[in-house]
Image (cartoon, rainbow, N blue to C red):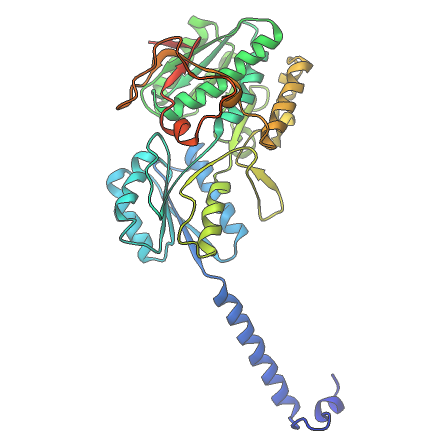
Length: 418
C-alpha cells in the first residue's frame, strides 16, 4: 500500500492517518489471536506411571503416548510421575490438579483405582485407569485397555510357524485376567499355525510371581529352553532377561508392548522375530478430544483394537495395536531371517488376518470357541471353569465387559508348569 492510498479514502469514509490505520489493524489482529487462543482450551494430561519409564516397555509405551499427544495438540501439555504406588496415587493426582491437570490417569489398575475415590470431588477433571479385571467407572472415571490379544494372535501365527522343536515358551508374571486373555490370543495363533502346517506345537507357560523379577525371569527362561526344548520364547513380564536368554541361546524371541528393536535398540532382528507395539495414544486421544469438546459424559469404557486409529503429528496413522519390528509394521515387521523360515502360506495368513482385524471383519475371540483348560484364576463369584468346558462357543461375540473382567481361565491344551 503506497502513501497516496493511505491518505485517500472513498467518499463518506472518515479520513485517517496511515499510522492510525496500522495501529487499528494491529489491535484487530491481536484481538483475533487472543480470541482464537481463548476458544481453544488448554489441557494438561497427567499420567501416573506405576514403574520407572526408562528401560520398560509398559511405562515406556505410555510415556511415548503422552509425548505424541502433546506433539499433536499445541494446546495439550503432558506431565507425569514415576513409581507411583496406590498410597501415592491420590496425593500426586491432587498436586497435579492444583498445577492445572485436567485429565489424570493411572497406567495400572492397582494404583489407578484410587482415582475413582476423588472423581466426585473434581467433576471438571477426567480420571482414568487401565483395566486389569475391575471395570467399575463413573461419569468422569474412564476405564481403558487395548485389544492386545489381536496382535498377539498374529505373533502366535509367526511363533507356531517358526518352531522346529515344536515347543514355544512363555515367561509369565502371575495368573490374572489380563495375562490369561493375552496368552489366550497368542495360543490361538500358535494352534492355528500348527493346524495349517499339519504339525503339533506345545506352548509352555511358567510364572515368576510378579511383573518385574529379572533374576527369576532369567531362571524360568533358561528352564524352558533347557528342560522343555523351547526354541521360540516370549514373555508376559517386564524385564529384558527373557530376551537376553533367547539371544544367548540362539533361539527366536517374540516381544511385547513395544517395538523393542526399533524404539529401544534391544537386540536385533536376528533374535527378535517380531514384537507387538501398543499405541496407548489412540486411547488417550479419545479422552483428549472428548475433553476439548466439553463432553461432560464421555465414553467410560474404552477397549480399542486394530481397527481404531489416530493420526500422529507427522501424519502417520497408527492402530491401537499392531505387529512391529525395527520400525517396520505389519508383515514387513517379521524379521528377514525369520521370514525365510516361515512358509508362504503362514505369511499370507498373517496378512489376511491383520487386514481383516483392521477392517473389523474378524476377531480370534469371536471365531474360536473358548474352552477351559481347568487352570487359571478363581474370581469372587466366578470359579475356574472345569477342564473341557466350552465357556464361549465358536462364532459368538463376547462382550467387552466379559473379556476384560471374566476371562479367568487358560485355554484347553496350554501347558501350565508349576
